[in-house]
Image (cartoon, rainbow, N blue to C red):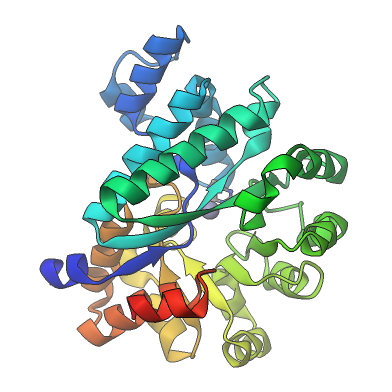
Length: 324
Ligand code: HPA
Ligand code: ZN
């Protein structure tokens, strides 16, 4: 089974590049940038990764990102992610980045984007993995800050596939960002949003109706609303599901109780992704293995999940066809 999973060509559609910062790399970047970190050892960092909800995790995740200072840091971070995911059979990745996490501490948008693009180019040459960038707005910040971020990204928009929405979901519904998503659409950008991770099915409706998303990140809570499930299935909406993340953030009790196969049975175009692999215990291969064993998935179900990842990607149809 492990060999079958490793051999499946996959796309990863839900990956926060800042969430791929491994503790070892955190120490390395801290050392080379002269940044103090509140941990004595790699083991102490890993021990701190116990979360009871999304906010618990976000507090640690934003603190960790403080070691990222230079273009080289962002390049090295991306390259390490691509190397690990290529080993898991990932052929294409659409990666999120959170510019406000960096611009708010004085790191220029250009530093972040140039570093990531350099890592992406090098990964394509070295590992044959293609990739695209998705700029995420932090939803706990206001609309004005999101507009400012979109303006700062203007020089790079031809290298950015789309915009997304992440960070603290509860109390920050998609409606808060309807205008900035409309502005992004006018610039020809794709749109995705985290919805229904901790928030209610109503937030998924808002992401569809008010943000006009092309893809839904997580979307688990849609299962609470049968009419919404029918709508998502009929429209062929892709859900970027993150099994180990769901367990680590206590949105699903155990991996054995994960609804991934129920989603497929309901006709949803579900995919498997790692979200923040350095924090949640595994890259995309580990997520496939976790649901394969936890839920007893068949090879056919696993192949459907992998196929869905290309169908739901932003690759042009001709490129999708080469992967199927
Ligand atoms: N949810 C919301 N925001 C995030 C996540 C997540 O799982 N990971 C990084 N930012
Ligand atoms: Zn996420």
